[in-house]
Image (tube, rainbow, N blue to C red):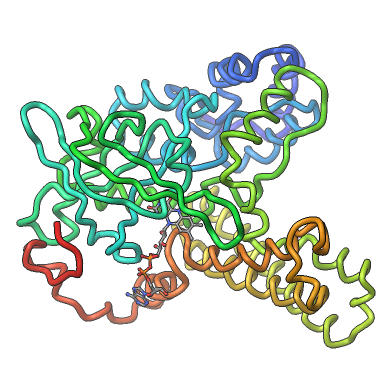
Length: 418
Ligand SMILES: Cc1cc2nc3c(=O)[nH]c(=O)nc-3n(C[C@H](O)[C@H](O)[C@H](O)COP(=O)(O)OP(=O)(O)OC[C@H]3O[C@@H](n4cnc5c(N)ncnc54)[C@H](O)[C@@H]3O)c2cc1C
C-alpha cells in the first residue's frame, strides 16, 4: 500500500473534522468517536483505533485539529506509556480492555517501578508476586509513584523468581489500584505540589491474564516503558493549558486538566521555561547587561541544538533508519537545558526569584522553576544513568563491572529484604 501524501491526508482529516467535530458533545463521547475514526492516534494499528499512518504525518493532522479547535484524544500522563507498552507486548484481551479508556481519558495510570532500595537500579526490585491458587499475590513497597492517588491502573514490576539472575526473575503486571491491599500515601515536594506517593502492596491480587508478556520477561517490557518515557512519550513536556472556548467538550477538558491532570501542573516549570527567558529579560531590563545576554545566548543555542537533534532523531525514525545516538542524548540534553534555564532566570530576577506565590516575579512561576528543575535530572533515569547508557550503548565503552547479573538474585547483596 502506498503512503498517502500530506496534502491528501490534510484534505481527508479536515473533511472528517468539519463533518464530526461538535464542541457541545461530551468529552468522552467525542473521544470515542475519534477513536473509532482512527484520527485520534493515526499512527496506531488500524485494528487498535489507528490508521497505520507514518508518525511523520501526525504534525499535519494535529495542525488540522488546531485549525478547527477540535480536542484530541487524552495524551498526557503515564497513560501514554501504558498504551505504548500494551501495544508492544500486550495480549488482544489487554488491548481490548485498556486502550480505549486510555484514549477517552476515562482511565488514568501510574508506574510502579521505583522502590526505596531500587530506583536507578530498577531491576533490583524486591516487591514480590507469588502465584497462589489461581492468581498472583503481590507484597512490597513502591515509592515516587506519580499520580498513584488518582490512578485506576498501575504498571507493576515485581519479582516472581528469586533463583534467577536479577534481570530474569522479574515479571510485569497490570494491577487494579482501587482494590483492598493497595494503600497510597501522598508525599509533598519542596515546590509545594504533591504528585508523588508511596504505595504499599499487601496481599494485593492480580488475575493471571493481567501479566504483560510472559513470566520472567518483565525486564524486556520495562525497557519498552522506559524507552518511551525517556523519549518524552509521556506527553508532558509540551502539555499546557486547555482552551477558553465555550462548549461542553471544552468545559469538560478544563475540568480534566484541573482534576486528573493536576499532579502535572508544575511540569512545564520543571523543564526550565526557556520560553520565558527573553520576555523576562526585556521586561526587567536585564537584556542590557552584557554578561546576562551572553548566558541567554548560550541557553538559546543549547535549546535550539537540542530541538534540531530531536528533529533529526524523529526524521530518522520516520524514514525507518535505525536510531542513532540522538535518542539517547535527548533526555540528558533536556536536563542540562532545564538547569541552565534556572541559572539564567536567577540572573534575570536576582534575589526576588526566591519569592513564591503572588509576591514573586511572574506570579511565583520563577520560584517554582527553581524548585522544580532538579526533578528533570532524576525522573525517568538520572543524568548519571543516562551517561552510563550513552557510554555503554552509543560509545561502546566497557560495561560497569558487576557480577550481580549472573548469580541467583537471592544471593545478591542488597540493603533491603525481600
Ligand atoms: C518527577 C519525578 C517523577 C517520578 N515518577 C516516578 C513514577 O511515576 N514511578 C516510578 O516508579 N518512579 C518515579 N520516579 C522515580 C525515579 O525513576 C527515580 O527517582 C530515579 O530512577 C532515581 O532513583 P533513586 O531516587 O532511587 O536514586 P538512586 O538510584 O538511589 O540514586 C542516587 C544517586 O546515585 C547515582 N547513581 C545510582 N546508580 C549509579 C550508577 N550505576 N552510576 C552512577 N551513578 C549512579 C544517581 O545518579 C543519583 O545521583 C520519579 C522521579 C521524579 C523526580
